[in-house]
Image 1: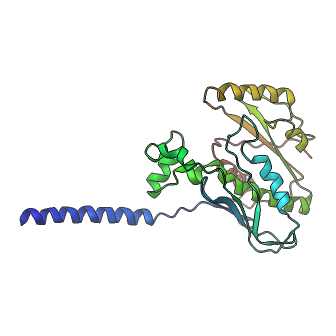
Image 2 (image 1 turned 90 degrees about the vertical axis):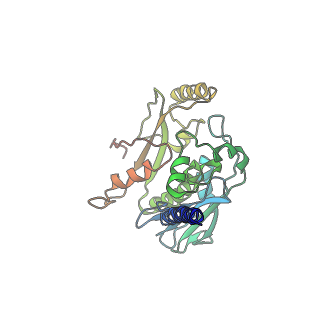
Image 3 (image 1 turned 60 degrees about the vertical axis):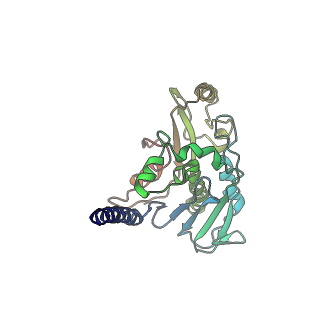
Length: 284
């Protein structure tokens, strides 16, 4: 009788501990998927879920925007384009679910989704019992007590589809308001640096090769360097340079919402980004 009571008491304590653990985990909110104030972007979806995308709030009414304009940007980022990108095959077709009628914004939230098709959850069966080094698998599990095993879930680079779709809308808005132009290119891979005239390079220059560097000689060396580490199953670091021409005046607010601070948060939240540097070249 006494042994039975002690056993039941132990089970009760274990059950209470497990209950508290579950309650604690349920009380942790997985926030952090929304960025911005006036132009607010929330990305959603997991790498091997049904789809990924974004909800954009704060877009003014009567802005012309079409699925084709968004698709142009998604086509530039979609996987499987060359041997130096991920081999996953996805069409990444943009579908506007709300906020736009006949190519004109309503001023209401804009929802955009790209359906996942190349889902191979079985390829990640080992990850269910072993965390991948340098990935967020362990962090998600420890923090929330659950994770999307296949493809890293929200920590996958497929999350950036929502950013690209929202960026396409933002670029169109900035173009209409102040003829602002935003361009980016790969400026360095390992120790190979490019030499690009930041005031004059064009999108066509960027898209002229698979590494997306306007400096053709540097691009060839970059591709060789990437292939050299790729064949060994490794990777290498690099740098991307982004240029904003005719930036609108007065963006940002003091003190913690300065433009540089806001951009830093957006850029450093990109997967694998480890540093950010600002400069002010004479780009016009």
